Length: 195
Length: 195
Image (cartoon, rainbow over all chains, first blue to last red; front, top):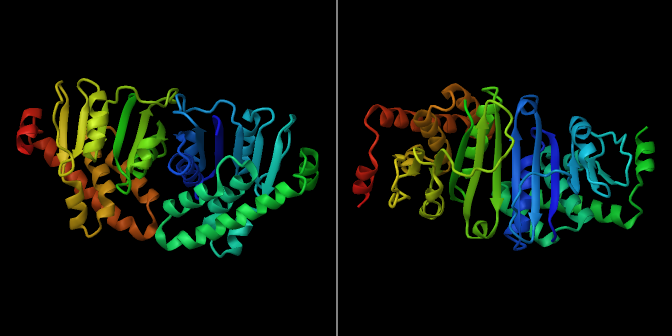
């Protein structure tokens, strides 16, 4: 696990911070690595926007701010407009496909989209959206082992919601494996599909 | 609200991260300031230790790492041993008095202690310990308005636990006002009381 900078962003209630905590725990507690999670509260938080920065690494993280994230998980249009330009060339962009219209992304970025909110609603609780997204992240990025993330999910949600969140994780994970198995949509196709 | 660095530390399950989020929200969303919360996951997290760094300010926070915190909230002996030496001269140390033995603190630090776990248990739920501590913090530090923090508490806990957490906040807040009104125990007295 080499040093990887990740930005997760959306709006309040989507579990942005919890997603970052789950991935941070998976990297550190269950994969013997290190992770740092940084959350900014500022004017944008007053508008309901929510964003977390996560840095994971094999060795202690000396600088916790992400400058050019390798991976972005974007769950609102506002977050897309604000953060997408910072994605590293060659970086991976994971989006909630019903909430984000991908455009103006003019470099060699890989875009993976998932209707995470709809998949969560199929499970009966929209609030497990973040576990769907974490499962998708795990399959698509291959940064962390699925088992480590599963344990971190189980460990980070209230016991009464554990089973549901693990189901949500599997749903996102499978969706991600299928996305990887088929050709992931190239940027032009993704744009086209959203026109 | 001038730039203030805060370290909150204890063990998993005490609500360390939630406390930092509540104070960060109070500073930014309800007091029009800025805040940054950083959480490290590493070997110590594997042992159950938990720590958050919070920087609050009138203006955007450019560097999120605390170097010499102005204020520390310490809820375990392990956290005390590890972090207390970093407290700024003249800084404030808030401790959970049944869990932390204050010693070897050889500068002009102000120590305020509260049996937060016992107070939470009196309310019937040990898990509201963090809201007791946040109330105590609010009264003792006078960094944020009580109203801003109350709103942030209400906004950050599940609706079904809102009332209980607000009660816990008031309990800690009153305890802090009383501590401030009486002479806060000088370090020697605090040490003596714990011998």
